Amino acid sequence: IGPDAASAVIPLTTTLKDPEWMVRNAAVYALQRIGNTEAQAALKQELPIYIQGLQSENLEERLYAVEGLGYFGRFGSEAIPSLAKTMLNSEYLAEQYKGKEPELEKVHNWIANQAVFSIQKLRSPGKKDF
Image (tube, rainbow, N blue to C red; front, side, top):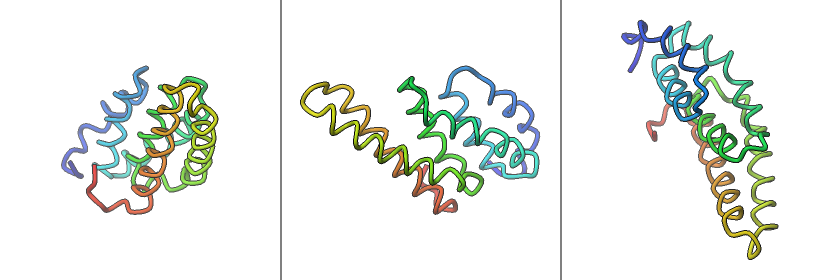
């Protein structure tokens, strides 16, 4: 994907409104890879929604927001402080659930680990690791 896929920007921008975070994450990834002015504008508009998703009470939504932020590449660096806060909060919660609620411990550990991975991707946007 690259500038030659510019004709896909409008349909992908529409896809950003899909209720399924997995679908939206795929659109974010594709827009970041296209990288033209229109794709950048769509990502800039979507970024606050993803940052807000980090605070969701719905753990699945929070998981997808953490993962999706890593797909923003060079367009998502302003999300790093929010991801770091989410990571620390999830590490704390995982520790609180340890031995009491194994599933919640597992989910919060996954969120914390994914936050680290997403921060690394935002700091090294040229790296082809996804």
